[in-house]
Image 1 (cartoon, rainbow, N blue to C red):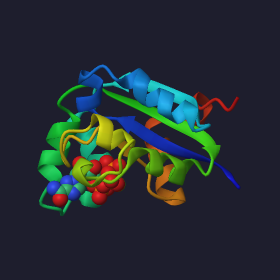
Image 2 (cartoon, helix red, strand yellow):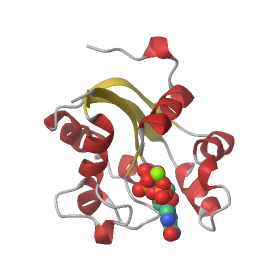
Image 3 (cartoon, rainbow, N blue to C red):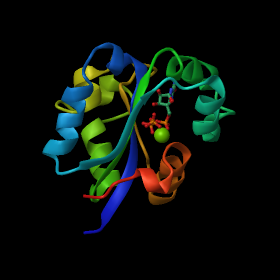
Length: 141
Ligand code: RTP
Ligand code: MG
């Protein structure tokens, strides 16, 4: 299996609930390492740029409004199959459809306030990591 990196965001709802540590523990428990991290307040332009792929979707404005409603915890996770491992830990986009024991099933309220983001493929992971972290601020260990 390949060692990969993926971008994870703990969204404003989960930061407000004070469960950053509980969510990071799940990543660590699955063998993923945090190799970059920062708590930050996204600007509207940053959030729009990050979710540009969804710009034409009807939920885009609500999504951006939500992502700038409070600080987010952005991090790079590294490990075997990190992209899929993270998506499995997150669960389905809609927490009502997410499997028991996943982060979204346990911490998310709705499809809009759904606790976490995770890159969905190798190319998006590379782009999303570069969007938030210059290469010299990512620390393999
Ligand atoms: P994310 O990008 O945040 O990790 O979520 P995802 O891959 O599971 O879902 P995606 O299709 O990329 O959608 C991005 C975010 O937009 C919101 N959304 N709302 N109302 C809707 O039908 C709808 N569909 C998506 C969700 O908050 C989702 O996380
Ligand atoms: Mg997505």
